[in-house]
Image 1 (cartoon, helix red, strand yellow):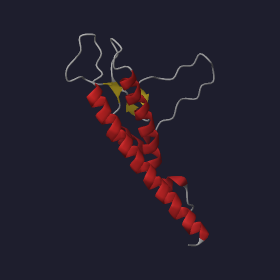
Image 2: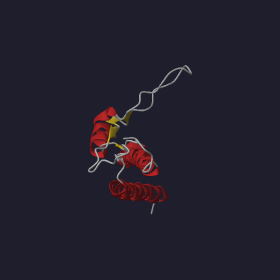
Image 3: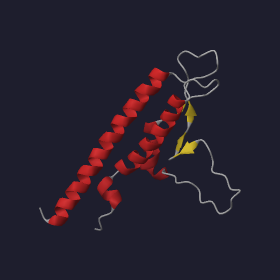
Image 4: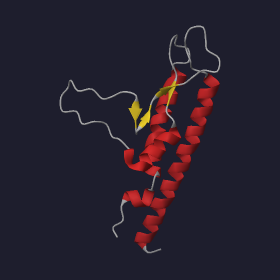
Length: 132
């Protein structure tokens, strides 16, 4: 049976990509916390990972013409959605700094956990190759 990166890493490689993408979304939300009319966005991480595990892990479409456009709103099989604020602001901005910081922190912890697991699996593979 051939050893592949998918068999070694399992879902963690996909999780790292998804978490890095989500960090960019949450960072953009935080950067626009004072922008009037800005709508906070996020993805449902659990739904995206479930879709990725089911084989729906989508890559960007191949662009063969400069006028081709990528579909917006979907990444890794998950829909990029608008966040509903707990208390809307008068200027139409839906970013709630506390909520975004909590989501960003949780996402960062998940990213670090997945990174440690991937690192541990690579260390095991290196040990096996060295015969340790």
